Amino acid sequence: MHIALNGWFWDQPNTGSGQYLRYLLSSLRRVSPETSFTLILPPHVHSADNVPAGVDVVTTKGFGGNLGKVWFEQRTFPAQAGRVNADLVHVPYWAPPLSSPVPMVVSILDVIPVVIPDYSRGFFPRLYTSLVSAAAQGADQVITLTNASKADIVQHLGLREELITAIHLAVDDAYHPRMGAERDKDVRARYQLPDDFILYMGGFDVRKNVNQLLLAYTYVAQAEGDEYPLVLGGREPQWGTPMFPDMRKYADELGISDHIHWIGYVDEVDKPSLYRLAKMFVFPSLYEGFGLPVLEAMASGTPAVANDIPPIAEIVGDGAYLLEAGNARTMAGAMIALLEQKPLRETLITQGLARATNFSWRKTALETTKVYEKAMSGK
Image 1 (tube, rainbow, N blue to C red):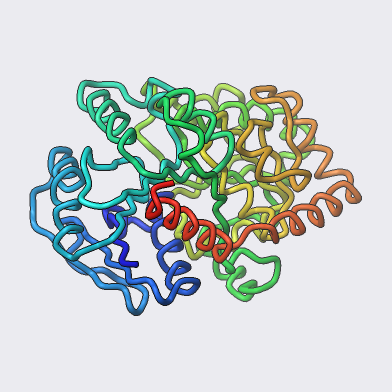
Image 2 (image 1 turned 90 degrees about the vertical axis):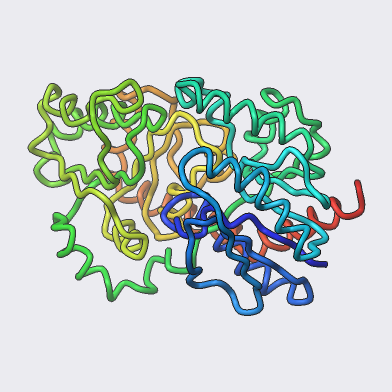
């Protein structure tokens, strides 16, 4: 079998789609060495780093901007797949072409733009969402990340349930309680981290719901703020828009700014150390396709607190402290309990580590090959 993959996100390893593509392709090469893979790159990727051995690479020409992206997805990629005589194409994010010369698998990691309309504001985002929603109807098989996301796809895109397979993600081996810990001291110095701290890493858009965490932390700060400051990791946006409410201003209003460390963008190689160094990880998101940061924290031996939303509940099982979504008081109680009750903390660490062992990129790749076979057989 010869499979062509859309490589639009190959040069963006810090995004969810970029990580998914890189880890998946590397794992597919290991579990299916007899399969041929061709990575078709968009014009803005002039050279591909870290491409697995044995994977052919095709570079393309074109133009940039939003229209250039659509042109690559709808015209260039399927045309190149035909030229390399691929038997199957895989688009590893929600942007399939309206027509494909061969059977097509599409990975729809989430359907945020249709579940939360604020994420498709403006003419072009609405038009693009309509385009990819229509194009998804032509997929022979669809991969998503959780059964919760599968239900959303059925409900919002109208795809048949039997065409959709939920395949969980995994974490890199670097997320480990001990392996790589020799880097922790340098990472602590690089980000000027306090001795003990509570950690959040992620985005600051409205669905990430960081305001719930800040409000919850006001209860912690009253008694534990000096000993356990709150570290917020992630690239800060332009604050004060409907998509990015001003969290710095909100922290000032709550009177907790003195206990908060804003560390900005965190390099991927530094993330395992931040998890290991943190006393706990808190993830207040209201909607996710998967919720990978919670799994990363669990695999690192760090107790995690998160909102009880379907995708995260599906992933973490009893490996994290789940609570009512949007309830800052309950979140504060969970945080204080983990700080003060050592048996609870140790139990959650043990359960989190055990749960994390259920996820591996090998397993993800093997389940993906089964989807390829279903697409090729026409099932």
